[in-house]
Amino acid sequence: MGCYRSLDKYRVIVVVIGVAVIMAFSLYTLGSYTTKPKAGTKVEPVKNLATTTVINSSSNIQKYTKGASRSPSSSIPMATFENREKIENFYSIQFPSKSTVVHSNTSGSYTAKLPNGLFSVGLVDIPDNSNVQLYILTQVQPSLKSFLQDFNPVSFNQLNIGGQRAWKLVYTWKNGTKEMGSVKTFMEGSDNAAAITFSGPRYEFIDQTINSNVIRPVTESFHWIGK
Image (cartoon, rainbow, N blue to C red):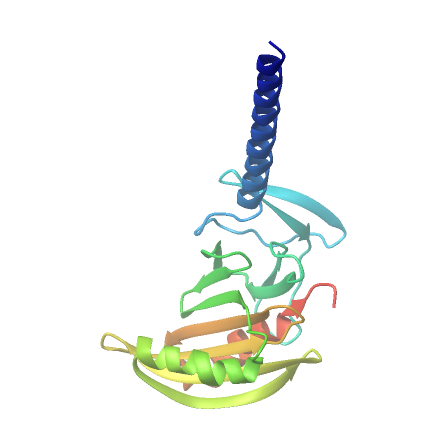
């Protein structure tokens, strides 16, 4: 009889532990989904820097510090977006107000659509045995060359943006029969790096207007929050 009671007690303990593990996993999974909106979820700009609120979009909750601003280096209205999805990699960036900003398919990433091109911004995990510059030369450029039709690097140089080291890669390529151009800027960070890419018709890159009024203001607006 004592043996059966011990066995029943053991089974109860196992069941309790199992339920606790399932509940903990469910809470963890729920937390993961509520802090990362689905790809294509429209993202709203921040409104008021003094107040923090929670925006619920398509049942996916994301925190924003609200605030509106205008980039001093741009002659067009800009909207500020803050991403706080990945700890140690919070950042702020501005896009032209007329752009449509949606969440991309990974944490810490946005896509901003404009009539004359497309911005994408995302976090990049640089290997411990490398650095941003080496990563671009050994990983990014070979990948672009193998993936893009008629990939042709135009320039590659180091910048200083807001006291932060950055590297800019300019290249041309083809999308079918369309001549395209891209500017990819990598911002160095204490954990991940950030990659900001603008792509559009190649003729746009001949006109300096798009560089001075669109690309540069977006890139120069980027900063790591808390730095």
